[in-house]
Image 1: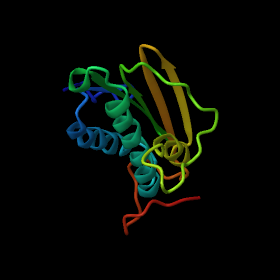
Image 2 (image 1 turned 45 degrees about the horizontal axis):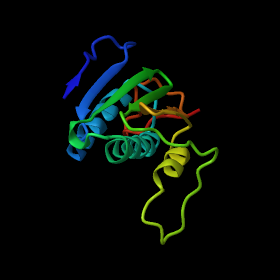
Image 3 (image 1 turned 90 degrees about the vertical axis):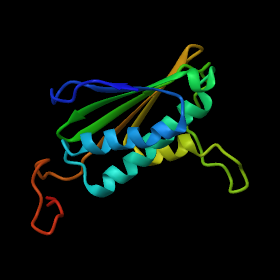
Image 4 (image 1 turned 135 degrees about the vertical axis):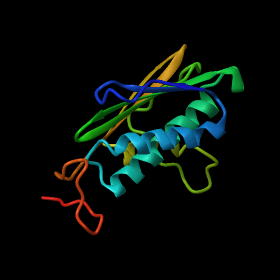
Length: 158
């Protein structure tokens, strides 16, 4: 598993790993670490972590033609008021629905895309026969500086 240096605050941070579910925890840790550079609230971050986890899990499950030998790449971009995460796989692609809807409770799957749409502020999907890239963006709704917090640990909002 490899990743890029995080010292340059404006540079994208990349994490590339073999398509194994045990790498999902590392993706989550990376996103949490980078979110500390933004103004995302705890609740906004939790929603976004769920969306990113779904995208990465789908890349492992559906976008890995060589199973655990396939690679998944996660690229994170931080802005003061937003976090953007791209998840790229090597799968054969899929027909992107215009507006994914949540399946009924009896369905065994199909909740990933609707969940990502509900929890991220924007989602872009580029899917080709050589792979899929899902780009998720979460915007901070607060105006507090990324490093400041109120004494009780909560960020102030305007």
